[in-house]
Image (tube, rainbow, N blue to C red; front, side, top):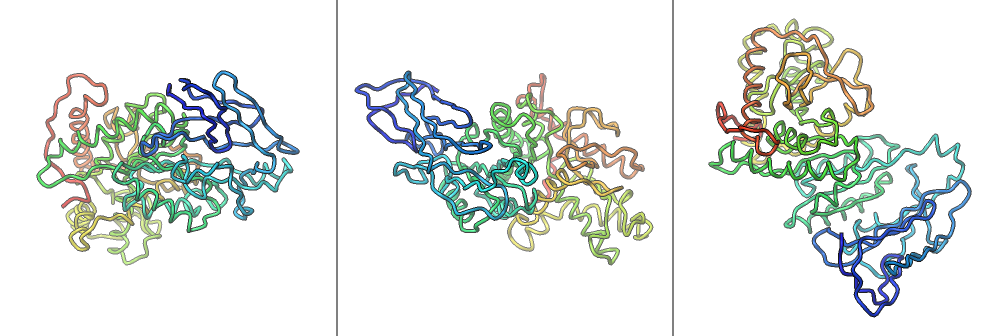
Length: 481
C-alpha cells in the first residue's frame, strides 16, 4: 500500500519516525529481528486518516526477552523497544496485571485494537516443558454484524470460554458498518468491563480485508433483512453481493484452514456464494447455520413425548434454511428409542410437527415482536461446539454443508443441511445410511429444487454461465412473517 508519510519526528506506538525535511512515499515497512517485529501502516479502520503502528508481537525466548533495536535506512523508521516494556501473553486464566505497551499518547480509537486489549501480558512461565502442557495457541474469531442483536448475545459466550473451552485464549475481530462504528466501540467497552481472562484481543473495523486477517473462524452474521414487499430474488442479490465481497476477503487474508459459519440469510446460498469466491479455502470448511432449526425440532419432540430435551437425539434438518426445510422425525430418537415408537401419533408428526418447526421463527416474532436473537446465538455456539468437541457415539448434528460427493444423491455444488459428526478437530463427515421414506424424500427434493433455483439466480456471483432467476415459489425464511 503506497502512501505519503509526513516524517517530522512523530512518535507512533513505540516506533520513532526519524526527522526528515520532505514527505517520503513508501510502502508499509516491517523489520523483524529474531521473534520481534514492528511495522508502520495506515489504519483502514473507520476510515481514519491517521498513522498508527501495528502492535508489537513479541514471542518468548527460552531464557529471556532481549532488547531489539534496528534502523531501517530506506524508510527512515527506527524501532526501539525498552526491555522493561516487553510483556508477553499468558494462556492460563489467572493472568498477571497488564502493563500498557508504548503508545506515545495515542488514544484507543487511534489504534487498530480496542482499549485494554491493546496491552500485553506478563509471561511468568519460562519453562518450555511446562508451557507446552498448559499453553494453547490463541484462536482468532471473526464476527460480522458485530453490533447487532445476535452478536450481542454471542460475543460474551465466546469471550467467556463457553464455546472453545475454558483454557482457550481467544481474539475477537469485529466487523461492522460505517453506521455502527460507535456501537462497535460500545461493544468493546462492555467486553472490557467483563474482565474475561481468556479474551486477549478485540479488533474492530469496517473493512473486511483488515478485519478478516489471519482469522481461524469466521462467523458471518451480518445481512440485510427482507423489507416489506421485497421479492426473495431481490434479497438474494442484495445479500449475495455482501457475501461475495466477504468470500474474497477470506480468500485474501484469512487463515488457509479458516472455518466459516454463515448465519445471515438466505444462509445456504450466501454460504455457497462466499465459498465460490474463496477458492483458496477448502469447500468443506463452509457451513450454513441450521442448528437453530434442529434445536427447535428437538424442543417440539420433547414437548410431545413429555420428556426433557436432552433425551432427544439424532435429529436432522435436511435442505434449505427456509420453510422448505425438512425436520426428520423418522431417524430421531427419544430415550434411545425411535421417535416414531414413542410418539405414535403420525398425523401430528406429519401435519403439525413439520410446519411448526418450519415457521417457528415467525411465530416467535408474532408473540414477542422481535426476532430470535438469543436462541440464534445459542445455536451458533452449539454449532461450533459440535465441531470442536467429539460427537457422542451414535449421534449426529445438523449443518448446511457442501454437497459434492454426498451419500444421499443430493445435487453437487450446493450447501445443503445434512446429518454430520465430528472427531472434535473442526472437521466433520456426513453420516451415511439414514432411512429415507417417501414422505421425507418428497420434501427433501422440494428443498433441493429450491436451492438449485437460488443457485441459478445467483450465477453472476459464483462464476456460473447462463444463470437466470426463476424461483419455484416465494418461500419465506423461518424468521419472517
